[in-house]
Image (tube, rainbow, N blue to C red; front, side, top):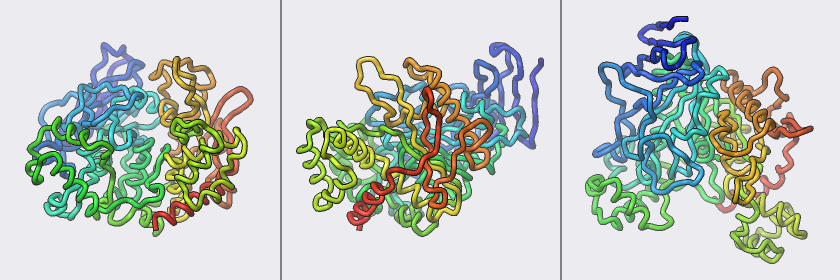
Length: 526
């Protein structure tokens, strides 16, 4: 069968149908900035466009500036390899990259499309990776979009600035900004990628009016941030959050005036008396300066532009995006030994930790997180470690959206333990272990997967893609997933497959615990 070419206005996609990959004509698409040429997946069913620029390289005078529109090009630009990942000061042992290097020139995105024509108008899923806003990249094999694209969606992923390059603020940056804002450049990068999707995704067979943003950890926090920001208004229609929300435990997000002082002190310690001197420093000099300031991390702030006010206040007032939300977390985000910080898990040490973390409120916490037996200590320490790490913030986001978001909310808990890695401590359903399941990429990790794991992955890709298509995860052949609401009894979908067990919805068993933590967090924030 020959090649097919479909036209939709100025948009062109050349799609190979049934020829061996080596003999296929490479697919092309016409973006607003020029033509890109991609590649085809080994099975011939997915067209892959990698390393497409969505903004100018944020280097030189554009360092610590909002992303600028990408420059147009003539001819055909190759989009067959991933663009550089953004500079990151440290690494994460579970991250593997397929891009050339880390660089400040990193604002590239990728598209996986199974559209049969440019008129297909498939739903679009835009992925935001995690890494604590300090690391990560879109080239990781576990986040490859080809398998998920087989579910009738288009998958897009982007790189965004990290650490000091993505979240640095300084008084001079506030002065030079037309919005009197400083920081949040990484979040602005994400918004620019979403704007690129709205402008260009039709050329790849996507529907610009049916876009779902989804992410894990810092990517999930980013999803909740994009929902709160007026900058991203109208750029997406649904949201999925995996382990992370914008609500911070016990503290409020700092304003740019405060983070600017931290940035100014950092600049002085780095030997830069002003912003011009900072921009004149090399990438490596900036990274080395951050490493010299142990414990310093750059994080989103209330800049007055991306966040006009504290994002929790935005949610409380119902000013966020009123879109359907699917969100939850993993059963073992943190384990009990992480709460004890390598102390023996004794009752004495448990009570000591409660006093350290909660002070006068420790007795109230102990009532709902008891520690009278070794089993109770294990369970309570596990739950508290996870809550203080990331599950409380996710729960709070879900609750706020449910109260003021004006759209359906679906909550889950991922309960599928992954196989134990040789020579490592069992980690159960640990933080980020859901990513390979959501993308259908179990083979990205060399572990002894079985049929139950594969079945769980297929169910999750179906739930996630169904939600992207219609704002509801339910579909033929899938266990019913009810909305999370008081009327429905606050049902949580537990995602696990093993002999005699399949995904099922249960009333939230942790509501009293999170309500107590929320009361304590609110008291500390006030």
